[in-house]
Amino acid sequence: MKYSTLGSSGLEVSRVCLGTMTWGVQNTQQDANDQMAYALEQGINFVDTAEMYAIPPAPETYGTTETILGHWLANNKAKRSDIVLATKISGKGLPWVRDGGPITGDAVIEAVDNSLARLQTDYIDLFQLHWPNHLHPHFGRHWPNSIDYGKTNAAQALDSMHDILKGLHQCVQAGKVRFCGLSDDTPWGIGKYIELAKEHNLPRITSIQNEFNLLKHIDFPYVVETCAMEDVAYLPWSPLGGGVLSGKYLKGARPEGSRWTMTQRQGLIRASEQVDEAVSAYQAIAQKHGLTVAQLALLWCDQVHGVTSTIIGATSMENLRENIAAFGMPYEDELAADVAAALKRYALAF
Image (cartoon, rainbow, N blue to C red; front, side):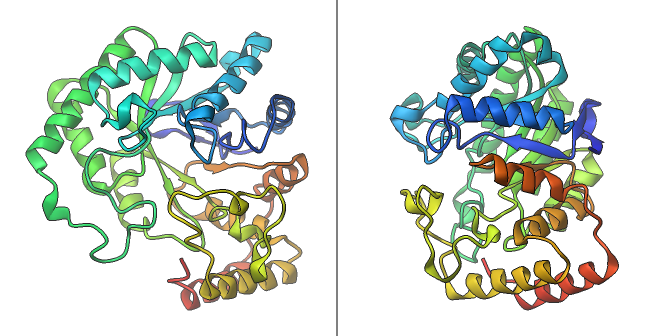
């Protein structure tokens, strides 16, 4: 396993981060135990979760994933210091989470305490804002005019960020949080949080996790450039594009128990002929080079300049082994050229 430095934190994290959002709906406690054991055996020391998990989000499963991970931590106390544990506070919009309200400093303090209780630990290594209060282009809203940035009151947004940082500061000072990060944010958001932290001597943002894969790569170069220049770790989530880059949804297939058979808040935004064509092309390239299409997608993500650690998830041990194995495979010149040609052809597949 290879490791990278998590931005300005100084923490060394594995190039593979174990995502956990399926624990509690598609995976059981025993599944989670097995995944953790195998991940640690492979040298993975980075684990990511969130208060809103399991996915798809619902009132009855809110906090379930943290609880499952907490049971594992309680039964493996000696291994806690070997793990860089990351979790996230939900943003506004979920009625069952703080009445759907925005992230505030007080909400941060409350969420940290609740996550610590569910996780059965004394500290969180990386506490992240799951999505920002201000308008942002994530979750399928990246097309022109999907959102109107003119409707954001910059002064109010900055006041909100300052308040959040003050809440994070209290948690850091209390020893409950070591480092702070973002998720689903933008270059503007990253920059303003860094400026405010510097101006007011508050916790510095050390990482951001955004969706990034062969079907959606708009973060390169602008978000990735900002991260490189500001020493912020870049952590791709959904490197398999919600599972479609595994090839399992080709030609309208809907495997029993798969995510695409469940309710999706934004609908099946990748269920299109264009995506099918792109995935089929990548699948052909993968077969040519002795890979699965999932391994190709993960290998591509890992080799992108600026990527710190890629967040993966799996609902079976077979898939977990397949996915982790990808990160030890070479990204040879012929493979790179084949992928680059397909990437240009299907640049707007998402």
